[in-house]
Image 1: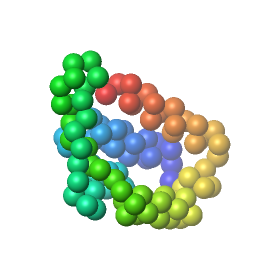
Image 2 (image 1 turned 60 degrees about the vertical axis):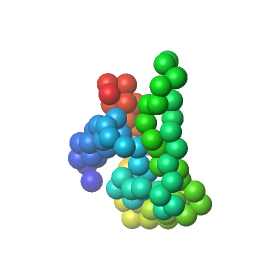
Image 3 (image 1 turned 135 degrees about the vertical axis):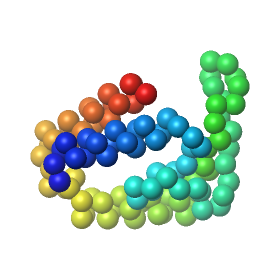
Image 4 (image 1 turned 30 degrees about the vertical axis):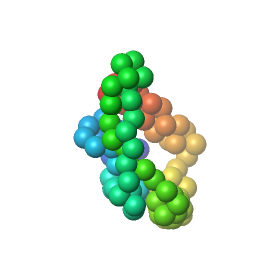
Length: 99
């Protein structure tokens, strides 16, 4: 998979991160916590409620770890050059700063 294709996927995910309810990103999908629990997080500048965030627990962590292991074993990251990995990591940072 080309870095350019991954770049578009990353841009989409970072854009989604800044909008809507705050779910867990597991296996490429934004999902509710298995328990359905959320917690409120404040805006540190104002103290006002910033968002309700999914409250991940052991089941969610286990799902995320399984998905990460599968992605590492079967996805492009494992065979990608360190240079290409670095480009992707820097791109994620740039997109977060832009949002």
